[in-house]
Image 1: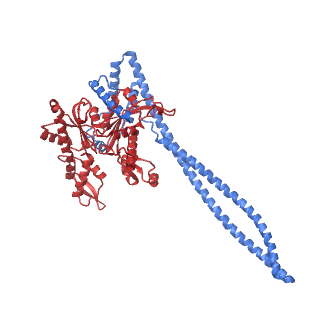
Image 2: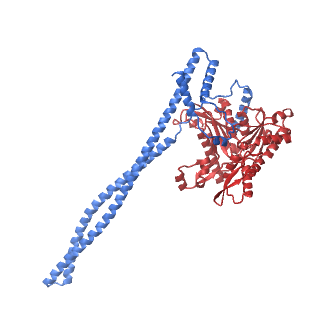
Image 3: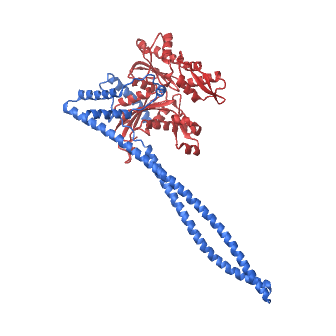
Amino acid sequence: MSETKQTPEAPKKDHGVLYIGMDLGTSRTSVSASNGVRETVYSMVGYPKDVVSMKLLKKDVLFGKEALDKRLSLKLYKPLEKGVLKYTGDAAKDAEAKANLKAAQDLIGEAIRLARPRKDELIYCVIGAPAEASVKNREAIIEAARAHVDSVMLCSEPFSVAYGLDWLEDVLVIDIGAGTTDLCRMHGTMPEETDQVMFDIAGDAVDEELARRIAETCPGAQFTIHMVKEIKERYGFVGDPSERCIVELPVDGKPTPFDLTEQIRGACAILIDPILKGIHKLIASFDPQFQTKLKNRVLLAGGGSMVKGLDTAVEKAMKERLGGGKVIRIEEPVYGGANGALKIAHDMPADFWEQLK
Amino acid sequence: MSVAGFKETLKDAVRQMSFRTSLDNLKKQGVQQVNVLGIDRIIALIEAAVHRSLKSRLVGVEREAVADATKAEFLRLLRTNEDLQRQKTEIERQKELVEEEVDQLRRDLSAQQRALELKLEEGALAMATRYEGENAAIAAKVRDVLRALAATGGASIVDAEERVMALVMDIVTVERQSADEARKALHDREVGTLQRRIKKLNESLDQTEKRLQTVAAMKSLDGGISSIYREVQGVDPADTQAGKKKELMAEIFKANLRLQKKA
């Protein structure tokens, strides 16, 4: 909010400072705020298809789970894809791009609203954006956030995860999102392009693989990609299963139990190989004196890190290919990025915030 | 307020600010293990932290003053929260009242519209019946006159009939016009009254619906939750990595300045 917006009607912002850390993800958007609020919402935005559905839903726009549940009455948007906004910068010409941009803006607004800010407090927000986001993308995120906060900054997502844990030196962060997996090596300074590796084998790719395996092995089973995602989130594992994954799927309208243990294990395992390649690349190109230390400080973060046994599996693969290593899964995969962004917001000096108002 | 009383208030506040969730929900959010900390322990920790902080930074009277001021501020915040709760309840009550009012107005409007329709139908039917009766009576009278003329002889019957009919119809037309005007005036008054009532009810309904929207909007207004910070913070100078963190903050800022000044 610029000073020009301080009209007589605007509340005086003299109560305090609310810091918000946001992790804008392909699948989920999470916020952590300095008033203790922590919320997460599926990165989905729905608008009523017609007047009838608008009258029924009594809302102009729905978000997250609510949008997903009412999707038959809505035009549903997932404004982020492979970690970046589905916005090419030519929204004026492309109606779909324009709609996605609006959905992204509404989603950011909703995420800030979820943090429950007071009107009389300054709001300073740091958004964890994908390392590979284009300048146009970053500008669009900034513009969307500016409408709701006093000052906003972007930072690289894996960096914010490491910063949140105070691991600033000789640590390798693996942030497994829905759209992309980002690997970032930290060595006490801001990571550069050569310190980062990104690929699109992540949560969504696992969902697609699991859907393919179910279609191949469970004749007649009916399912949507949303159902597959829920199955993965509940049972996802690699290595040895702690229990059989018995899932009911409709066959010709009748709920039928299927044992999906092998399908889930196989689908989740597609994450391991590219992660290992990324680790290998970042470790091999690091200062040889610190390579061992880096190998022993691998952080697993993001929603994808919730796959059971993934830390052990990566560790095992590192032992085979790199001669050893230690993988630590962060305690709160969903909020790791948002918590880190919140800490950055907290540590940012006042004059920096002022200059970006 | 006594120390014990303050502890209870603090305990209530912690309870109010906490939220309930299930283990399944926590698992979905990626939490595999939780550390359990009792509320008494949390209160003791808060107290200990506050005391330690005060002890390390302040002395004697100043410490007492800060402690008192902090307690007062805490109680003020609690009272603000209670006021907001009361306001919310009042708004909800107002909303229910207005909703009842809207329902009643809708019912009244519907009853008045039905009454008007009935009145219009009755009016049309009564008028048609009355005209038929009057016409028959006139025709009978004319026939009587003609028969009387025929009985007397002289003038041609056709001529006589035409004359009598013209005469009678003139009279009847005049009478009918005046009667129609009287009836129409009466009818118009009734319809006018009903239409005015309907208009008034419609206006009232509009106003009440607007009030309902306002109340509904007020209900959804969220006062928000206060941040724990009154001022901008920055890197803690006591942090062992303070220097490094300041450098990193400066780099993030520079990158954002480039991006946003360009945007």
